[in-house]
Image 1 (cartoon, rainbow, N blue to C red):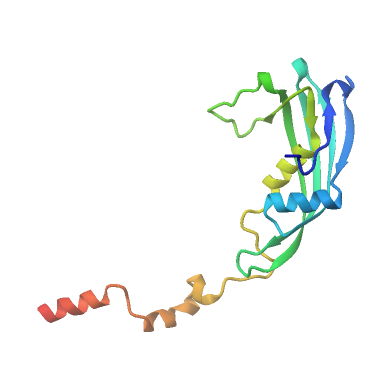
Image 2: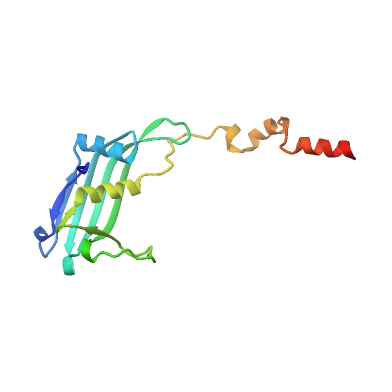
Length: 176
């Protein structure tokens, strides 16, 4: 299967002094990415990179990602627009040298493997976009209805509703 947004860059083409580049997704790529990410819409996905070669084929990639996303509110189920702007840093490691550690240092730079002497900057941007998406998006101004929120406003209705063990309490009273 072809990647929805692929921009391979040969590691050997990165100058010793480093380089900057920008990758942008087309409208068709954005539609395919929205489907992959399970969101109603995506447009204007762009990522600017600063790439610096390291030792033994490693590449330090600093990225600045922007995108307009349409997400579905978990409260109202209405779609809404949002703008994402994220920065990230990852170290790209040749796949044959990449090792997953059992103990992950949350303060260290993330490491991602690459294969065949090529880093896919489009896929890297897609992965960072997926991490930036709110897993429980809320439309601005949306509120959970009082009857479901457990607020004081819902208490009067609760008092008229039978309590779960009230029938047992009544039986106990009758036995005594």
